[in-house]
Amino acid sequence: MKKVHTVRGPIDPDQMGFTHTHEHILCDARMTHRTDPPTRGAYMLLDDHERAVSELKKYKDLGGGSMVELTTPAWGRDIKILKRISEDSGVHIVATAGFYTWPFIPLQVDEHPITQLADDLIVELTQGADGAEATAGILKSAIHFDRIGGVEEKCLRAVARASIATGAAITTHTAGNRHQEIPGGNVGMQHVRILREEGVSLDRLVVGHTDEHPEIEVLSELAELGCYVQFDVLKKTHYMLDLTRAKLTREMIRRGHLNRILLGTDRCRQVELYEENGGVGYTYILETFIDMLKTEGVSSAEINQICCVNPGEMLAFG
Ligand SMILES: [Zn+2]
Image (cartoon, rainbow, N blue to C red; front, side, top):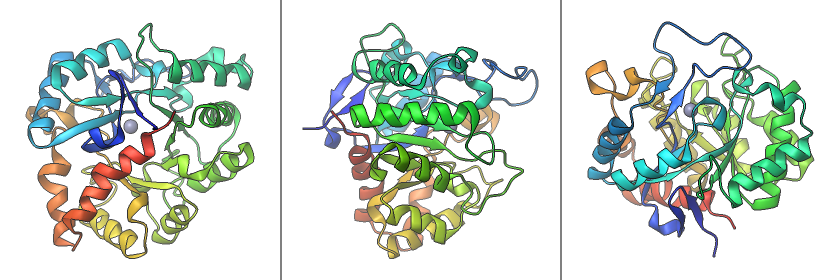
C-alpha cells in the first residue's frame, strides 16, 4: 500500500487526520543565493524550535493531525530538527525536496545536468536528506517570474523526473512576480504543459497559491485535468477575502471537484504566526475558516474530504 512519507517515517494515509498542505515551520529568507538577503521588514523567518512545538501543539489540541512543510533545503529546511519538532508536538510533518524561487536556487544548480538534479531529489525522497535517515515526502517547483524559463524550468524538469521515478507529488508556488497578474493567479497551466512533456501524470500536480488571483474557469480547468487546486494563503487577506475563498471552494465542489481541493495558510513570518505580533497561529482554518465554509453550505463530510482525505491521497506514494 502507498504510504505518506513523514519525517518520522512512513504512515498510512488514513493516519494523517486533519492536514494543512502548505505551511512553514522552519524557514529563513536571509538564505538567498542570487539577490541580496532582506535586512528589514517582516521577511520570511521562522527559527524558534520551542515556539514551533507550542504552536503545533495548539493546532493538535484543536484537532490538527499533520502538516506539509514546504521549505526547501536552500532556505532553511532541516529534517533532523523537523523530526524532533514532530516528536515533541505529536503532529506528523511531511518535508520537501526541490526548489524555491529563483533567488533561492543555489548557484551550483546552474552547473549540474537535469539528470543529476533528479537523482539527488530521488535520494532525498527514498533514502534520506539533511544527514538524517528520514526522507522528504513531496517535491516542490516554484516560479518567480511570469513565465517558466531558465534555471527554474531546469529545476522543474528535474522535479518532474523525480516524481515519475518515485510517484511523489509536485507542489507549486505559482505566484510569480505579483506585478504580472496572470488569469488564474498563477502559472499553473504552464506547469501543466511542461509536466505533460516530461510525462508526469497530472494527478501528481498540486497547483498552489491559486487563491492569490483566482479565476474560477481556470481553476475548474486545472481540476478537470486532474490537478489539485490549493487555496493555501488563507488569512492573507491583502490578496483576497477569505469569504471569497469560501465561495470559490463551494463553487469548485458544485462543479464536481471536491476531491481536487486542498487548503493551507502558508505561515512563514512571525507576524503571521505569533499571536503577540498579530498572527493567527496554525489554527485559523480549524477555528475560523471551517465555519465560513459551513456558512456557505459546505457540509462536514465535504470538509472532511478536503482536509483529511485529499491530503493523504495526494501525498501517498511508494
Ligand atoms: Zn509557502
